[in-house]
Length: 397
Image (tube, rainbow, N blue to C red; front, side):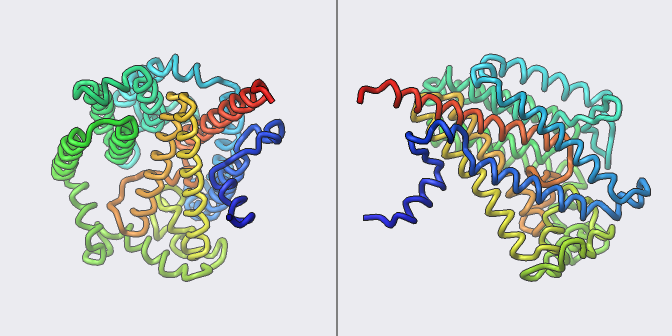
């Protein structure tokens, strides 16, 4: 026997829908509320963390909050459009998305605007696009389409395993030219995880992971600033005013946060002691102002979004909707791994990689691409529920 409350919680966790209620529950409401909560927390914390730098750069403390609001409005409009596009469209034109992304990555090397030594943005009027963010969604759509067509080849043939890795490596070369090692690591790990879910052999993973680790070590050793990042991560207090400055300031923010935090708006580290407080290190400001309670709340919401993505992917694979299933799993892995890297860098567990906290950090390209990925999850879930409801209605009573 099971407790009724436990059964209801399990159904809520995995998104199980009573078939009698399918007409009123044709989308994953829990996923929507979790995403909405992350977006609201992100907007509030970006507003709080960006006020000092906004005052210094533009004499307007709310300049970044206003831009964030514009980005969120644009995300909402694009989401309404994306929600009405069937998954077959994404599968059919995934290769065109990938080719367009490759073209943008090439263009950014020649006409891209440079910030902090990295040329990652293409300026179109007052709008700046970061093709590296688009490369994640484009690659995962392409890989999901490839696995639908070549899943047996991936499982039984080493060349079938190497083909998608070759596409990822081509993107990695263009990204490293910017340079953007963080995005390359996200692409590498998510691609490997997706191939693992597709059933590739274990020895292939051991070979690729070994090559990947060796390549990352070579890339770190090739650039002095990457070596400084690794050494400062290992002992930031050795040079607290030099290479370890950003991490020590971040750790101070965590220390000041305690359990309930200093209160919203009362961060000291955001007063331009901590660089990139509203982007890469937004989690440190959350820890300082909202404390342990805020940290656990945000991490729990991130976990539930990633978990629901994996559940949706599993359901799609069970119903033989393989493109939707692989893509949902890829989004879940991408979302959780990028959040892990961002939080790990802010907490001093990982070297700084310059990756945003999904749906929370300031950044137009990141918000647009990640919101599109979440809407794709909702579309996949809707199509699954619709198929299930139709099968229920057509089945004999």
